[in-house]
Amino acid sequence: MFGWPRLIYACFATLTLFSGIAALVWAPAWLPLWAVFFLLAIVGAQDLRSKHNVLRNYPILGHIRYLLEFVRPELRQYFFESGQSGRPFNRDQREIVNKRADGLPDTEPFGTTRDVGGAGYDFAQHSITPRDVDPQYARLMIGGPHCTKPYHSSRLNISAMSFGALSSNAVLAMNKGAMLGNFAQDTGEGAISPYHKVHGGDLIWEIGSAYFGCRTHDGQFDPRKFQEKAVSDQVKMVEIKLSQGAKPGHGGLLPGAKVNREIAKTREIEEGQDCHSPAQHPEFRTPTELMHFVARLRDLCGGKPVGFKLCLGRQEEFMGVCKAMLETGILPDFITVDGAEGGTGAAPTEFENFLGTYINEAIPFVHNCLTGIGKRQEITVIASGKVVMGFDMVTKIALGADMCNSGRAFMFSVGCIQAQRCHTNTCPTGVTTQDPARTRSLHVPSKAERVRNFHHATIASFLDIIGAMGFSSPEDLRPEHIYHRPESGPAATYRAFHPRVTSGDFLRNNIPPAYFADWESASPHRF
Image 1: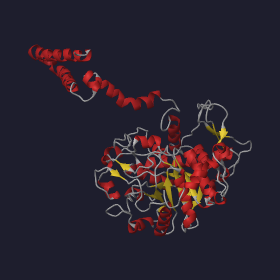
Image 2: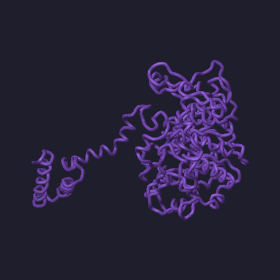
Image 3: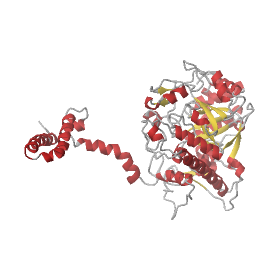
Image 4: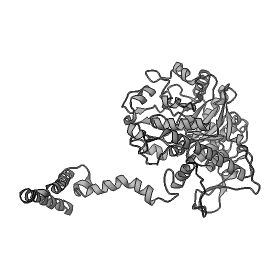
């Protein structure tokens, strides 16, 4: 009737009872020690009525299982994972960010520890005659034919992360670092907070489907509020968020535990309640309406660059946007392509794991579509998705991007240790929590210096690798310059995996077979 663990507990409880009586009568000095066993007996009694099968079958002892489960991520990260086995970012990636952020050399001895013959390995070929790349190529101008106030941007900026997902001190440190390093911080969809304004670093204002910071009381877009904030000299560009890599097809999510009074005021929402953004924008329902919304925002913000961010999903829908550009004559100044491997503060697990297109597949497609309609030179393409090192930037730009955004790498630079507790409000380093006691641990002045150092070293590495490949400019990079090993055996360049498209091919009906069906079904009047 009783399993042996329950039998042992019954004996333990009986022994505790009689030993307590004995201690009370003959040895009262032992009562404090007996109290410990008495408490354990109470825990065991509660375990017998627990909803957890393990605790019901193994009272007291079953807690060891939950303790080990609780510390498992730390044990794995600190003791068992190799330099390349950690996820989402391995130890080698985290260490190179920290070395660069500290201003230390990132040199390594003895040779690579990577499996250069393994599947998924990417590499480039060097030149016998390397070149020095002019530092001017660390920046580029963003702004299409309809933009009257183009932005001279760094080729690496801080990706969209909202105040709320980030702590106040994390926002302060990143923005001060951006100011010191002369690059930009994307606000994320959580509005422009007071902390974004303190140090005056350049901002890219992201507008999500809930229109935080520029919304009416019922959640609609408020053009007056938008214009008041968008004309600020600190706001350099405006980005419409269509979807996010970590949760495409799902609105933004900020758990109620992180929605304090300050965040509620910034976003114009209720304090303590889960904050869900709609999955779809109320202001537009078709690609054509999206283009008109782009034009409307550009007019309201005084001609600054306006674009949109998306995680590539159904390909015919993006092609519909391209057709809408042709039909309306309205172009976004930039398109940010967020890879499905991108980060988030909170996302449904299955959306995070199974939806969206990987960045190295999405970028060539977007580049080819814009090239096919003859508009590639007028639109800046920004790659966002696990960009950590200079070689990551080289790869993304070779595949079709012009520049990159990085989020979690900059989180590492302000102290993130990849504890993966962003959604619980218990971040141990004060980066992704609204707990004032935890947030205070993040020292803004020193972390801002780390942000600047990391950015500077990564850009330097990016230009150095381009020179080592024998090129004098990032504009020389092409898919054929990056090799990918799909499985054990000979590697091939990325050119072999994606069709070659020349400018205006789609307009001449010269459409690659891989794109033909999607192009035919695409419409500017529906998503």
